[in-house]
Length: 252
Image 1 (cartoon, one colour):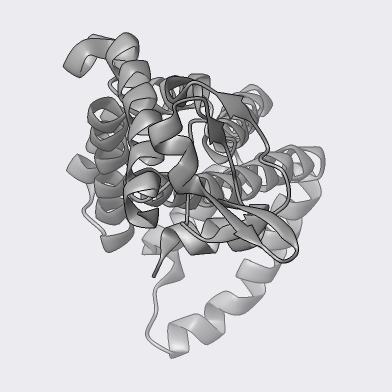
Image 2: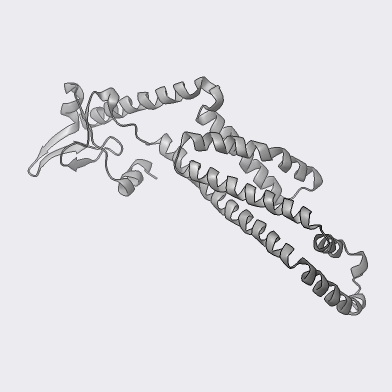
């Protein structure tokens, strides 16, 4: 996949007129319809006046090549966070709704279970010693304060996931910091869950979150790693200048 062409097809070309003659003359072409300037991202020519001008070092910083792949990864993570946040929020609201009708649900469960026990016994399933039945009974007999804490935790966690998703989708640096901190806080809980019981879903979630933290820390130079924010900004500025140079070289 040509990530540069894909980005230009969605958001349009980006043209720039460097003040340096060695770059400027190689980025512009004369056509019967007027001037056409070479896109700094995909290399195609676009008719009309350039969108900006000035020194090559001040050319717009574009997401291209590796940076576009990075943006795709971050937005894929954002989608996963959106889905998880919505599901967790829905679960938290469901817990609150369950609390409001806990008594009636418990009475209905006990009535139906009592009526079903003779049939279950005939089928060879001892409902009295069933772990599943005991888990349901514990949930139905949980204190209101316990349910409030569970619902509050779920709702807070869901909101954090949605905030994290917004920051990652918008490719904001605060979103990257937020994602690392929020995800790292819940890694110990995921490790504890794995120590209790190993499932494919738990392992996949832990590996995904751990990989996301490591990727963001290293690729985005967060918390001073690999030179920190200044080195990251300097890298973007250097890539901006290289975009002009590479586009000019390709046009020559």
